Amino acid sequence: MMIQFGKIDDIDNWMSLVEKISWNFPGLETNEKIAEHRNTVLRFMGKSQALCAKDDNEQIIGVLLFSRGHNMICCLGVSPECRRQGVASCLLRKSLEYLDRTKDISVSTFREEDEKGIAPRALYKKFGFVENKLIVEFGYPNQIFLLHPKLMNE
Image (cartoon, rainbow, N blue to C red):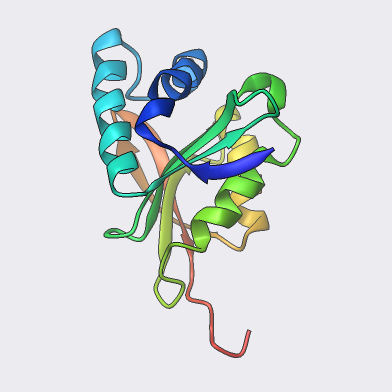
């Protein structure tokens, strides 16, 4: 598995994965919303804020968008057949190298009582993120998780 920045040439492969997992992401319910997301991914790629995991056949098996400006993880998804193989951990670990560890890093994920939240909440907690405020995003109940600053002596 390779972790690398997504490039414009990767967009069709990237969006193929997004379409496969869109059912699990509020805000990607329609073709129009997926087309908007494609434009978002292209913008993130242009700013080197889009990471992807590729298998040995160069197929994208995981994607992650992050924002340096907002110091946050924006979107993380892994192909269903590649879950529980460390893909999300590798993507998250790599993204943290590009964010400001002297400030809080945020991510929005599903709430505790939501079945969709079991795996992502466990992943973020494993990396040291802690629960924060409850929010609604794309009309869906979510929760912010924060990774507090890393102290210099850690």
